[in-house]
Length: 314
Image (cartoon, rainbow, N blue to C red; front, side):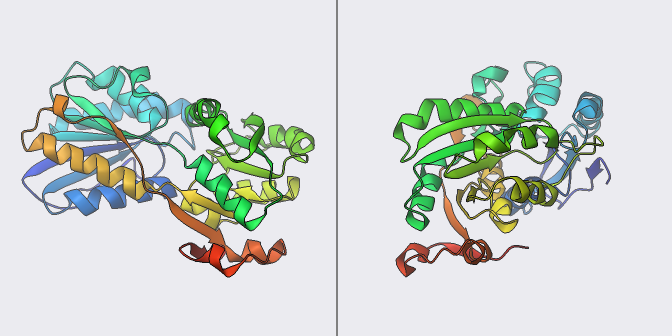
């Protein structure tokens, strides 16, 4: 895939969007849809991808390419998606060095970890709907009393760990353990302690390495998980449920992208960035995989399915 793609539309503003992950990553696709829904009528939007799920070590070098593109385009505004784009691109190349308004989105860490907000940077934090997802699975499986968490050992995974630590007293199920993986070998080591968990909440596992060092996509990660854990797997994003997770109250890239784009548009139209406060995602969408319901022999009451998006495994 190309490192950057041509503008999506023409308009009075020029905007550069720097994505942390690959162009075909479903989270990035959602963010792009959200951005385009707001900015396509009024801006010429160029996209650049750091590809850090596939090649984290190469991210800083690609961030230099993003900085070169910024200097070439001289955009009216910038959107930077997810944590790697903040640490590799915004913080070293833009923060306090330019006056261009910058909006982040998809940031799992606290904004202060990157020195945000400041005079020209604000944006949207990303937080999982963990409590809602645990409440949903308990409607499908009332026996769920202990939930464990499994994430990639990454900035996003560690940020979720911090979120869970701060919220867990309010969860409807107790937290039985929090596991971070870099490789498939790590997942195998966790199979025994995970067996005692009533449910497993997963996030940010795409990009972990197999035994040959190859980075796995979500479909491959789920194939491994289904072989290691037989209980209900809970997701955080739509593509988790579409790949076979039982259910989730999902966060969406579309919401992240549209919120950041709305903030940036205000700034480009003259609102001082200091008057554009940092916000966070708030919409949660219920999703249930009916193939997984059948596979696990779960027969929920019809009322539990009302209002949920029912999907099949893709």
